[in-house]
Image (cartoon, rainbow, N blue to C red; front, side):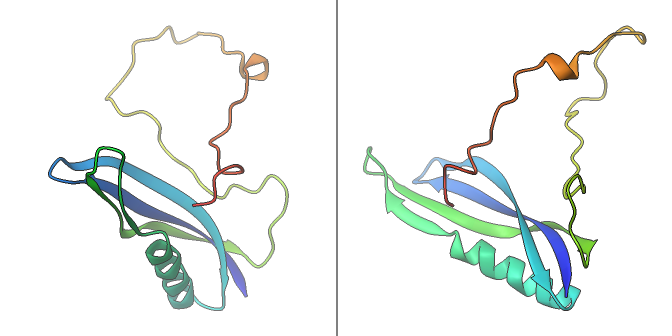
Length: 119
């Protein structure tokens, strides 16, 4: 069996407003083939769909819209293995001095909340 990293996308649709949120969820799945990993990803996505009424009495729908990407990680996972990459630059460029100094070891590390919220 192989490990795969899968990114599924959910959209939040509120009443007549339309899409108010788009979320990408990263999961690790294990499967014998890529086709089975796609099937597992689709099953996860569909299991996250919800329909409910919010506090304003508007109908809220979380809809699975698809798999964004599926990457084979191999037969073994190990500490430090990259499971997801994303280009966080949403604009063409940001002016900055080429020799700018960064201090990544000094930052306060936040959390996505995944360990707290069970989607």
